[in-house]
Length: 49
Image 1: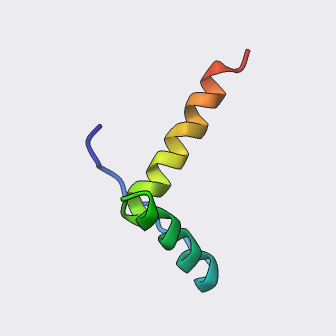
Image 2 (image 1 turned 90 degrees about the vertical axis):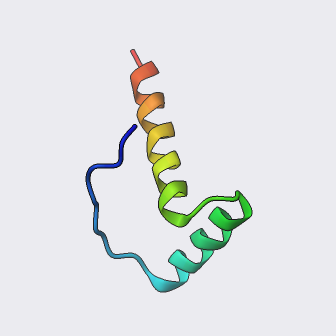
């Protein structure tokens, strides 16, 4: 899926650092890790009746 849009949002610095560490542990950038989380939630919603 081509990356076409940018989403800007504010997040607490401590939460960002924790998320970045998790993403790095998963071998992903923070941006890619967030994208994966969003894609997962979208798929879950599609499965709901």
